[in-house]
Each structure stands twice: as C-alpha cells, then as structure tokens.
Length: 89
Image (cartoon, rainbow, N blue to C red; front, top):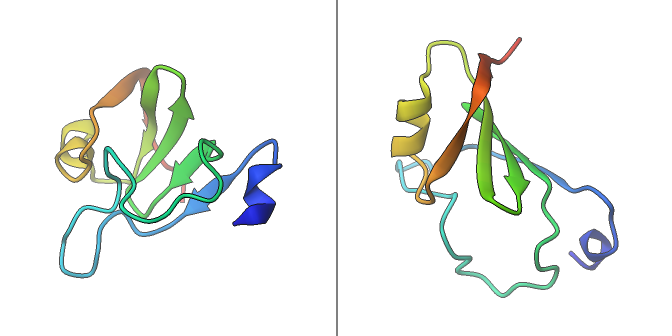
C-alpha cells in the first residue's frame, strides 16, 4: 500500500462484486486508507473504469453487458463515456 502512494499510475484488477453479490465499488472506502487518491483505473470482470476528477468514467463493458447493468452493480454514479465500447477478450 505504501508503494502505491508515490506511483504515477495505479491500476486495480478485481472482481466487480463480492462472491455473494455485494458491491465492492463504493462511494466511500470502508477500510483504513494508506494511499489516498492513488487509483487511476479499475479493471473488473465486467468493466473498465477510469478514475477522473469529475468521477468514475465507464470506458468499457464486458461482452453481453450494458452500461446500465454495470451501473446497477456499482454504488457511485458512473459517467458513461460516449464511446463506451465492448472489451476485447
């Protein structure tokens, strides 16, 4: 965690939700923060989300998913990029 604090770009790779279907991408972190505001991109099994000053920008969705479906599984409001595209696998 301390390594992340000085990085220019931090990419998080994770599953979008908990095994029981709970939300993982939240409006506010529920764990102690050791490297605040260091994440640049969140890559999950269903989406690619860029962290911007304006908020979370949805850039890509997994095949078969829509922006609305990703939003339903994400607590913060997503900014949907006009050019949101399907992930290439």
